[in-house]
Amino acid sequence: MPQLAVQQASKGHVVYVIKDDGTAALRPVVVGDYSGEKGILVASGLQDGDRVVVDGALKVVPGQPVKIAEPGSARPRKRTRPARREGRRRGKEEIDGRPVFTHFFIDRPILSSVISLLIVLAGAVSLSCCRSSKYPEMAPPEVTIDAIYPGATAEVIASNVARRSKCR
Image (cartoon, rainbow, N blue to C red; front, side, top):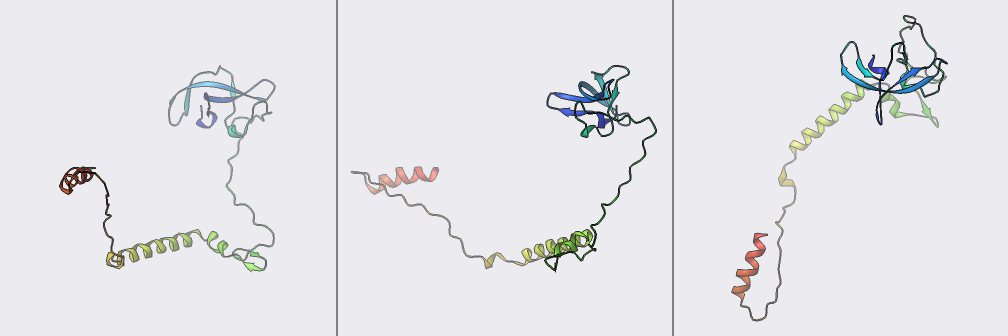
């Protein structure tokens, strides 16, 4: 079965089957292996003679009438560009009487890509030219601990408190 006919649902794989009245019905299937040119092998869920929606299966909803095309009657689709609006010319679009700057780059994607690459290269070159000596000096952080231990000498505090805080 063509891969386009099988869809992933929340509880497994499904296909749209055309009922006798010409409407689409959702049917769960168990899929097997994918076999490249042949598509997906359906292990169970379909019977001999079931008609499955292949083209436009993503647009079908259950209960929707389906137009059945005869084998070989489907003509190849042409990819066409959408027509431009009347009165608009390439690169001359205007908003409030001013030309729109962004349309210049939208109409010329290769030029836009080249300019973007040049900006990235200029940034990389300028980054390598900056020396770290231009940045301010950074002092390492210091921690001061004030502790009051009645009856303890400075040596006892230094050996017990300071040594333990350095280990952490």
